[in-house]
Image (tube, rainbow, N blue to C red; front, side, top):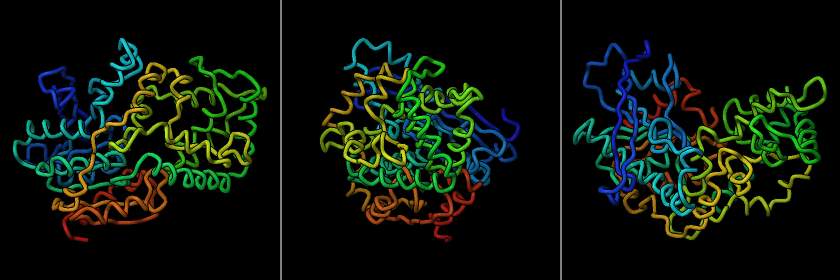
Length: 421
């Protein structure tokens, strides 16, 4: 037990495919957290839906995540490891390598989207709460799951809070990346405006990688295009500094790339702990409207300013490319299955626009005006299309404002949903 919190671990057995409940099963783990002084009270439940996809729920420490102390003032919180993450029958490179064919692996991975997560949540709710609805807090991708929840099982929900995660209800992967690349460009140029020396450093590193065979500690080759994926961090509140201080120690005294730099790049770009983040990234936008077809890669090829020889060199963001699954050790076992997922044309729809328009469950959402990952324009359009929705638009925080605000975002979302603000 963490001394700051009273915790109880739960493990549930759920069907891999909820449409075939008699078939194979997996385990889903969740951690119940309460204020020790109130652990014995009948507090309402708040289910936390982690961002991602493919990210496990946070492990609580004193005061962390930043929103948790605020939530525990009034609620009992359930930190869910979504299927395939953390302690929930995790999907890893090792487990993927055990599949006998790409087709079998792709079929397995198709059961890890938001619709399955919602079905898991409903089984868990009934086990813990009976027929009593609970509240949800969705960060980023957790907001996507929230809208699937409201589309499929609104009877299980009393109120929903979403931070930086209202997706376009009908947006395709092509729609999303057409809006995303310009925001990534602006963030990279913002980095260079704050730290002008970083543009020259990145160009120097990229040229070195293009002209030689530089290996990361695990044996992967570090290429210019892998280097550019460091831009994924730039949408967070500390993103500029994280990239800047990484580049600050890029070169050792001998003029070669330092061991510190290479180790950190390997960790930041390796997807060792969260391969589903890469594997399912574009599948989030598959809703029966044709294949996603590696949309981010196609969009990149049509943008000369993102060419590897362009000046200044632009980093990339929350985009996944086919080369990643051949060049990154933690993703190689998924390569052929990822191609099959990208070619799939019959993804089930995740959102029900008619049901959402008639929604009566209070939904409060914060939209970050300059969000690099989730387009504010699409988010606001979605908010207008869902009943009982109140939205707060701000540029006070970046995408991680839920935790960075120390509970202020969650407190205001709860007030919005309750009609107090």
